[in-house]
Image (cartoon, helix red, strand yellow):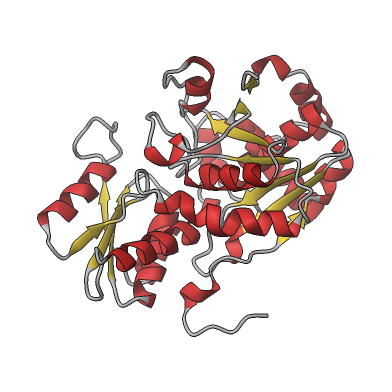
Length: 347
């Protein structure tokens, strides 16, 4: 048990939970690291803390200044929480198609919120460019720039990776993660492979993202779209350049409906969309590499942040998704037959 003087001191040291149902079905030990235990409710608290600490140490950020960042939600929440702990203000710029749950949390943490229309990255009104421009126009603003700021990946190299190594007693075989900025998969893969080069790192990518195709063919091409938020990207960014990836798979939103309900009903854990995609990737890795493997991934945030999308029947129907979950045995057989669709690094 820990005692702290401010919420930011409680970021990290999260528990790991074995997903009993999927572990028994696959003969592997599948663990999720419960990042929802962080004070801001997500894994992004870690990057938020490291980015602010490093900027203050360099003298780039001083008390009374305003942190500004373009965010899909969770990084904005984390930065708002950490900023308050260090006597800073926070301005989040967010596309207006994200869940209202995240908008509310940013405001509840005392941050200003500017919402913008969702537009392609090349459009100067994109949330990323809007945040950058606001920081350039105001001398008392500091732009966190989570995509290019390697303090993001440092957070996971310095804390998350070592925690995973300690919690598994060095017995982790496979690490699975989604990617958006790439900070999580980069920092963890770097640390874990420094401990044991044989640890396999799997990336799981949603529809609408080009990372899987980039690894497979060298360019960013995507198909379809996804209701997941804050993951997937269509460009190469600095944090992702440091990731050491052995395998990648692209999985559809429909699988998240099946697995989120199955895990809720069998394990009592309500997962959000990105967390469920992580678990889907872990299940794929277990089926392709098991049995007998120890696999670690993340419950990135609170499942309630996906209530208006993943758990909203009206929303799912509007997207043309099937509400009836696929039988788990059928999904497993489909994953077993999916080897040719998985990208594996050469050598």
